[in-house]
Amino acid sequence: MSVLVSPQTLKENLGPDVVVIDTRDPDSFKAGHIAGAVNLHEIFTYLATSSADGMAELSAKFAAAFGAAGLDGAKTAVLCEQSMNTGFGQSCRGYFLLKYLGYPNAAVLHGGVDAWKAAGFDLHTAPLTPTPASFPVDPSAAALMLTQADMQAALGNPSIAILDVRDVDEWIADSSSPYGKDFCPRKGRIPGARWIEWYRFMKPTAEGPRIKSADEVMAECASVGITKDTPVYLYCFKGARASNTFVALKEAGVKDVRIYFGSWNEWSRDPSLPIDEGLPFAA
Image (cartoon, rainbow, N blue to C red; front, side, top):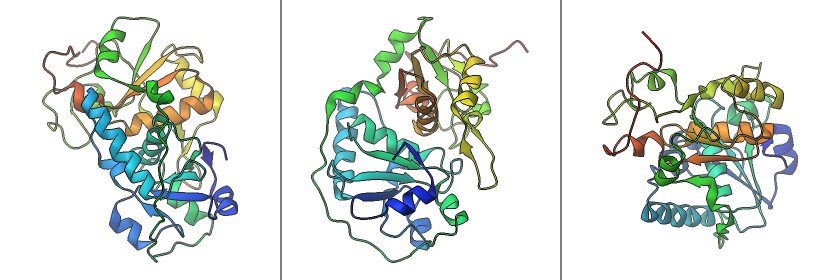
C-alpha cells in the first residue's frame, strides 16, 4: 500500500497482516470503529521534548505501545483519525512516529473514519484484545526527528527552509497554541521561519478534506521558495500538523523533510531561545 490509502484499498486488504490503529479519543472509538482496530489516542496527546532523555522516553513509550497493538515488523499499520482536519493531523503523527522508529510498513487512511463511512462501510463496537508483539526499533531513521539543537543550528541558514505550519493566529503571535492563547509562556515564531498554514496542503472534496496532488502541494511550496530539493524543517505546536504536512510533502516528492517534534510547545518554554514576536508584517 502507498502512504495514503483509500477506504476501498483498506477494505480489500483487511486481514491478519494489517493492524488498524485508531488515534481518536476512547469515547469516539467505542461509539464505532473499523472492525479489528486498536485504539491508541496517546499518539495525539503525548507532548515530547527533544532532549536525549525526552527522545529516549518517547521511543520507549511508543515502541511498547505499538508492540502492544500487535506490530511485529511484518504487519502493515494503517493509522486513522476522524477526518484529515478534525484531529490536527493525528493519524499522520502516528505514521511519522512509526517512520522515526524505523517501522517498514505504515500507511494513513486518507479521509479517516468519515471517509470509511462515506464509502458505505460499517463501523463496529465490539472490543478487540490485540496479540502483543515484539516491536522492532530500527534507529537508522532517527534523523527524521529534529532536536532543539538542530533547529538552533539551522537559524540563519538560507539553504534550509524552517517551515511553520501552525494556524494563522499562532503565526501572527496572537495565540500560543491550539489549547488556548496563553497555554505557552511566549507567543511568536522561530526566527526566519516561512509559513504555510497546514490546511493549505488539503482541499475539500465531497467526501471531506483530502491532501492535495503532488503538483498542487508543490505550488503551495513555491509560494515560499521551497522546491523538491530544499531541505525542509517542519514545526507546529507538538508535531501533529507538521506530520500532516510531512506526509503531503513526502508524497509530493520533497526529498529531505524532517520534523522538530518538540515544536512551539518546547521552544517557547525556553527563554534563552530567540523568537520573533508581534506581527510578521508591517502594521
